[in-house]
Image (cartoon, rainbow, N blue to C red; front, top):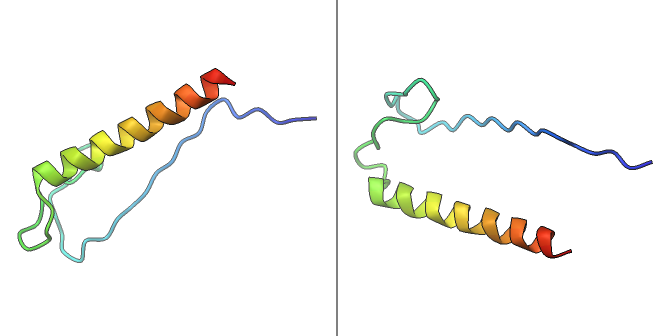
Length: 63
């Protein structure tokens, strides 16, 4: 008998090595200087993740 997962919650904690200010959602408010991350890098990462999720959903819908 197959098992259907209706909800999946994933939480992750990333240690940057320095204490960065964190918002209520657990997302760093600003990139640490010298960390190599910028707002543009974060936006590009989010866009890539969204595109990949949409591709996966489209592929599943075609089945």
